[in-house]
Length: 192
Image (cartoon, rainbow, N blue to C red; front, side, top):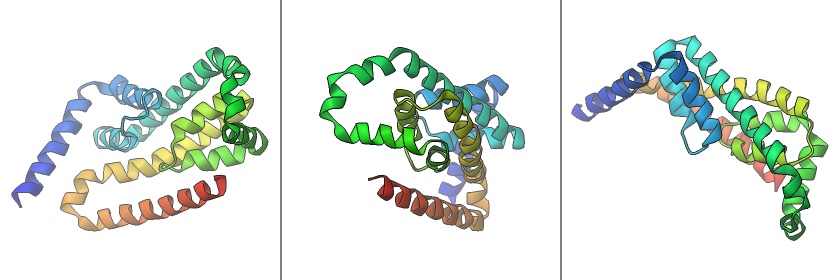
């Protein structure tokens, strides 16, 4: 019982700590996650939801979409031409096939892939930027898919404190995670 109280205290302290930074911190954390994908978006979404309620979802969404678009524009501006002209692509045919697949399949496939939080959306973002996918298509895909992805992550993240007090929330989140994981594995298999 003591360990549950300790976990509850730790989570509460983390939420309170990040709450000190206000809206800028909420948006900034999500923006940084898009630039540095090793940061856990589920934790960021959970912290924002616990601090700001539904507005936490909005702040996470704004930060994540902004960060994704910044990365896309930077890669497209500074690396795409060099990458497409490099010998690297000639040696790695799978990368060429994946980039062609992105260009051919376009909007709907990218939306589905970016909506699933278990797929590496940062890699999809890099591939889209390095391909010849139109900017407008990418923008639409990001706007729609991030809403779905962050909505799911926000639900799971918001329940972090409730998981301790109400175990049935953990079961609902676990079921959602399993469903999303299975869907992402099916898509991943088709991509391979």
